Image (cartoon, rainbow, N blue to C red; front, side):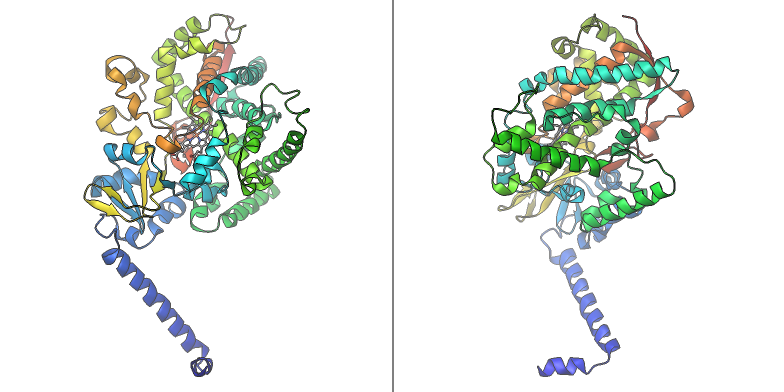
Length: 523
Ligand code: HEM
């Protein structure tokens, strides 16, 4: 009491001075502890990384958005295979250890990416290994190879509709942006697959583009800021920015991501009701909605609230089209830049799919080596660029002569493996589908390093579906049309290649664009 009354009698400026001194001293003490006495003290890296996460904040949010990933190779060049990139985080680029970290081990995920998107209830955001395994099992065999094959008809239907739009543009003497077609058709297919209803993205180009155009991030860098402060703050700033833009006369999409989220919530409520009355279920449906399978699984009530379910559904939905859209847009751009690739692909597709009035045969597409090589090379160029992070919650982890106490975050990058010259040779940066065929890939020695879907326990659950989508998207577009990039649109690498990390790759100009002239082939 006496101390308190003494403090109260001090002038405000003196109290502020003492408070600041105590604060700074504690910060300095923490910094000294982290640099000299922390279990990661011996790990090389920039000193600023040992003290704080300001380095990441600078490269991902302040200097330019989503660029830390491009610094990682430079840091490894300077410091070696292991670098301390945060007070409690190391990044390791070592192929042997890569396979050990991303194997079938009970490690937790450090789900920073999930927090930044505000989807910590979704599979993607579930940190704890046991909880994750249970949630993943709740999807049953929704994403198995046989289920993926069952989605063919659904995707062919949506792609036929997309092809009609392309034909119509040709009749009107207009170009069409394939980046939008490659998102719109899969997004429609996934809406039906996951929620059991149609949404018709493909009919509205402006609004569909709004889903993957990240230009609005320029000012507030929403996603990366969300890693450092409560994610809703950047989200709200972002909404404010969008409103201001629209008030200033910017385009007004008919719906937005938030609009879709609330639609998804409503649809899930209907689905929940429907499941209570089995006589109604799946009556008029071609395919059982994935979220119906998930709702029927044996999970805790907290995993089945409408909030948790809609995070779950929308996360899988966006995982299903955005990633694939990015990959196939990049692949198409590379094909259209190189006649040799384009001619070889088209001639192979003509053999695999002789009559375009009939749907393509997946067996024949599976057995098309050049198409497969093109997809692998496109995937190699489009892994999620940022780091994947794991931690062992209970045991010490070891790397060479380093030991990391439980809870230490250990990260690695698919993008570094995908361009490592020790695997891909001196032309690792060149887009060359031929590398996947013949001697260079003897005994699948390159296949083992196709890691765009990650590996091990948390390997992308949509891998099989992604392959079906990629084959069909390339097949429909290259078999049915003669294409050339619209020269007037000045499309370049900055519109297509991964430059920023937004979990999926984002181009330097924020939104992938690929306007083409598309002339339908007669047979
Ligand atoms: C080109 C296509 C795709 C690529 C490159 C890709 C890549 C990835 C990667 C790297 C991860 C993170 C895995 C990890 O943390 O280790 C992931 C997770 C995930 N992907 Fe995909 N993916 C693709 C397509 C799909 C599709 C079609 C679906 C739809 C079913 C999907 C659904 C998911 C889900 C739900 C997760 C979260 C799983 C988790 O956190 O463990 N992805 N994906």
